[in-house]
Length: 110
Image (cartoon, rainbow, N blue to C red; front, side, top):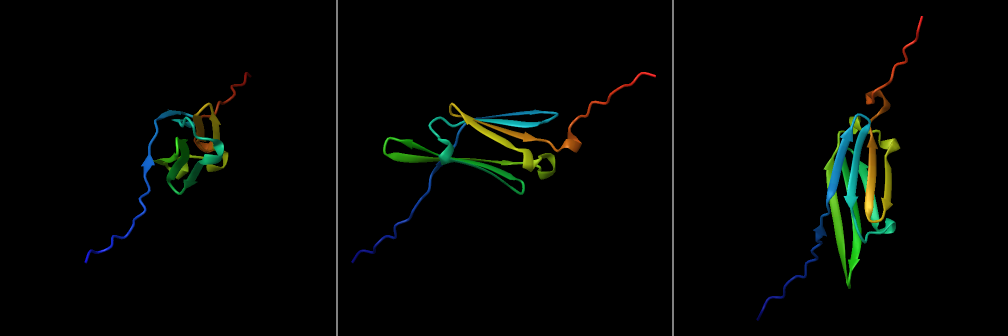
């Protein structure tokens, strides 16, 4: 008598290339996500983890994509994060809090 095998569901995730750029105002993430629509894309920030997840259909299969990044929650103004998806590229702007950004001081005469 042979033993039956339990069927297991395995979830596979692919990755995608990103560029990280940082300056005194914040961090810019550019993620290449060709074939991923806005409806199939999710970006979240919880505690110190930024997650980008998407789905792309290839033929009859769905490829799930995921990247996670550690962020210093005190170095990002979470309320002003901007995400834009255009031509398969996600542009994610993570500004620093106003208190950490450089401030120009006016010099007065007299």
